[in-house]
Image 1 (cartoon, rainbow, N blue to C red):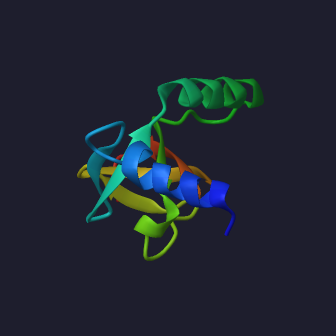
Image 2: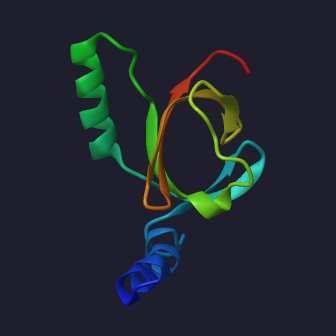
Image 3: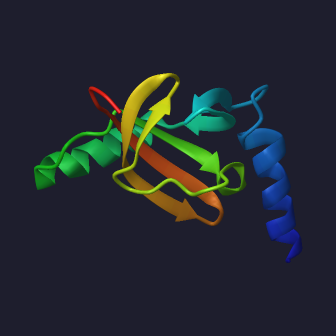
Length: 107
């Protein structure tokens, strides 16, 4: 692994996913994980979806791919902070998952 990738990996865990810095610890399908919300990117995501006539996401956040035993998938229904959601979009950006959730009425 290159020195840059090692530094980036360290920064992700010590800063970006650190609850004392940017992250928040939440319950994701019964497991506590550290995530970082991004309201600006959610707004851009929803603007694009409005143009295409698609539904709007309620939450967009980043999570370390290593925090999951099984990677979430599009269409999966799960509990987030004790409330039911469906995974609307999921993208892997170099080991960081970008997850968009849409609220649903029941699991």
